[in-house]
Length: 201
Image (cartoon, rainbow, N blue to C red; front, side, top):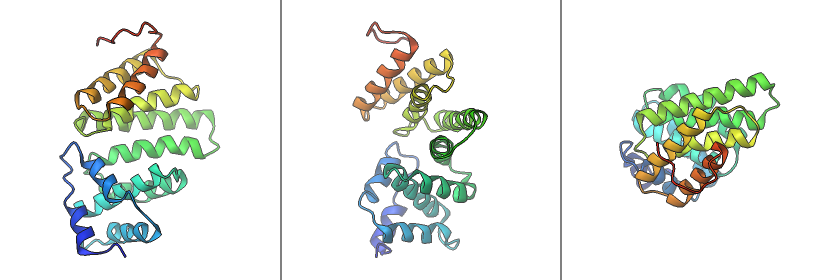
């Protein structure tokens, strides 16, 4: 069982104002099983516990589902719990992914897909504005632009330019630069800039 004081202390120790907070959550739940998933759900639903601890459990479980490619479980999880944690800016990233994965797992009409993409970008933009200092937040926005282009969903030139600027902000944080540079390269390609020269905002 994971429901030990040591495990709870690790979750309680997550500093949501730290640039590393999502990285630290991922480290805590990197080795998971069905027992851990159930324990996290227990924490989320225990209203006698500290609200921040419950949010960390909620977001940590979203990481498990997202990184494990369990997008159906991810969408059900975020749909069910996201309204419980509206005061936490990081929740906007979870909601953005919810809309993105909802397009992937459902047979939606073109109108629904466009609406869900717009919502995914809107929530990612809110997060980018509020918590751009957290590792991965800027790349979430930028990767949505690439994801949409690869699926022939409409993306404007301004969207692509905003994505490039978001990656540049991520690069300033000096975290996961390889991923950021690859992402920037794809955005530059979609922008029509094949020169290989640095993009200047």
